[in-house]
Image 1 (cartoon, protein in one colour):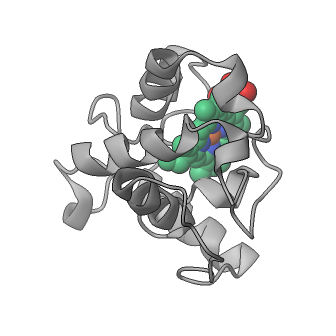
Image 2 (cartoon, protein in one colour):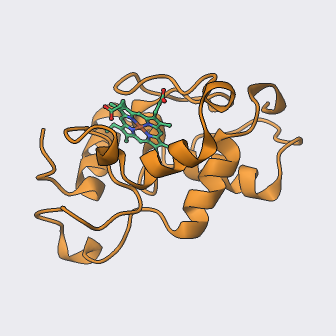
Length: 140
Ligand code: HEC
């Protein structure tokens, strides 16, 4: 697949195919900062992020296998590199199927409603990073 698709449409299609709930139920999240809790919720939103369509993520009740598991990510990866990847995974793999969440370059056939809009807001990106980069043991 090339960059010739609209990320939001792809996510919506995947969410439909996998039948994920809009926001799956979560257990207690007592040890998380506010930002990390917002990030956790956002990670579960199939329309807003769609991450769980492709990834298994510690502390989340649903997850997919299209992309690699993100278990152990905080322990092995550098926060800046993870941020860059979520902003625009094409920097790491030009033919990736992962959507560019905070980039508007090189997109084609984007539905009018989504033109000039990144998938995530900067706040959303920060919140997701806050959750993803928490040591695994701190998530319940
Ligand atoms: C359509 C499927 C898909 C979606 C949706 C998706 N990813 Fe990915 N992701 C991938 C694939 C495939 C890879 C493997 C590298 C590549 O091919 O680009 C990857 C790689 C990654 C990596 C690097 C993993 C590692 O082991 O270093 C991170 C971090 C990541 N994704 C985070 C996210 C986050 C956060 C979201 C949501 C904001 C997300 N992904 C949404 C498919 C997806």
